[in-house]
Length: 351
Length: 253
Image 1 (tube, each protein chain N blue to C red):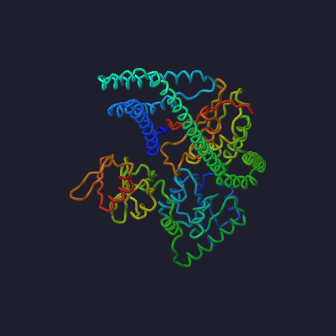
Image 2 (image 1 turned 45 degrees about the horizontal axis):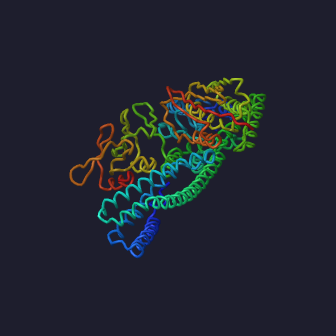
Image 3 (image 1 turned 135 degrees about the vertical axis):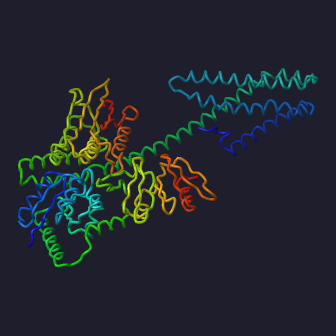
């Protein structure tokens, strides 16, 4: 947040004008009412009103860095009182000391000066209070504006995520290749063909009913992911191996629907699609202090140059986790020695 | 109808089984072999010289298209693919035929009869531009970006990720591709690479050179009003005045 006065040329001008008017009034009073000599008429307003105007700018910083807390207003008030005493005290001491030094031979004025110290401090305190209130007003309106902007940004993110998800739901390549496998199996192994049709239907139904903000128990999500893997297994046979290691405590843990789909799809695309050797995909999970940590890993051949841009699926998952859990959840990945690993931390939510 | 020798290159067993079952109805088609990846398929086609190949597009090691690029023997090709809009566009104009998975027995038979009439025309002496040549041509004219380059070097096939290319140099009808692991000669034009490499990453810095921006160590003046790139691997690449202009725009200096 920038300083509400020094932040723009216009507000500097207005602020300066206000203090010129105050200083001129003070000077006029000295000249016509108290009939002080001209050097005093010029110097006193300069070292009192103008100096105060400058120091009043500093009152912004306590306002900025001592946010008003509803829970403990006393703390904020105390902090401002301390800051105010420091600013006012140094202003009064400085201006009185300077004026005393300059006009030490003007006895009438010096007496006047020393008598009005208390008045000066009180008037200064009042103006200081007004300034602090103005600063609070400006700062809260700025905060409101920032919050609205942030909300707009978040809304945009949600929209993008939704769009990406629609795009990434079911890979048409997977669908048509699976149908082709089924077509082949109807002749060689009708039993297996039927099983594959049922698995494919379950998986499709699950992905169709899936909505952005729905949560299901981990066991249900994984059930559908197993359907997906079983279908790929029929296409690729012994080349695809997979292993699930699920802690009992994880089974009922709620997760967003289809959250693992892009990860399993990536695992298959970067391992089975690119390999002629058998490759393994592993899933495991454990609960830690009310959170659940899931780990998906797959073998891949680091020597194979990737054909298409990667990372869309991962970014998608990361974005969804961030939107669903804020900073309480996390997605991390690493590639080491031909094994790619994605770790997700889910906080427990209550539905 | 004459006998015809066939090879199947397809990475999924059920898909191969289906093709074989459909082929049983055509006794003049003789299956020489089936292969589950691009490398083995390429080797077999070059060695066994079949009349026709059923070729999948998405496969491990080498895609159907990459296989075509480095093929010596040129059989007739029937593509099989599930879903790939770019590929379908290429086939529609150029291939003998293509089968979209899943396909019916009738559709398969149709492809076979196209193949038969094509072979008959060939034997009748009709000279036709090979379908493979036309598919290559199609790719050269398309806007499809390259992610890897397939090169034949002393009998071996190398698949190079475009990220690993340091720079390219024109050499008559060929282009020399320099990587950290060595250099590879590819029969292709500079214009082709300029068009199909990612222009955010590769810049034509000279009539005879394309450089990978990520591999530039520094740019030094060279003679008067000319510049030379010093790459991270120590190689030097000359920069023309035009090339300098493009570099400036790309690197924003």
